Image (cartoon, rainbow, N blue to C red; front, top):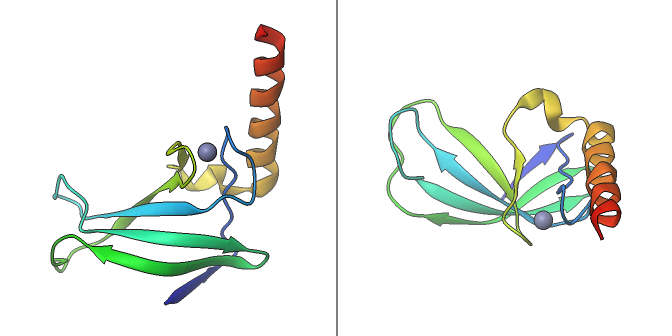
Length: 101
Ligand SMILES: [Zn+2]
């Protein structure tokens, strides 16, 4: 189990308080080495489980986070991690949905 403080994700579709999963990727590999199942708490992320798909090589690893509810990409750029920005994006999304109905 690992704990990642000060990270928080808001899904543009589902909002805050969603579970997320992360694809663990290497620099060259096309497919992820592992998938991490993550719960969000008040103070950060807790990796609950890790599904190892193949052995990790010695290289720089990166993670791509998705909403555990709808699969939407919740983080690709570090600058978008600010929870305030993420919640704003979510609210804009809701607003647009209501506009189009
Ligand atoms: Zn979602």
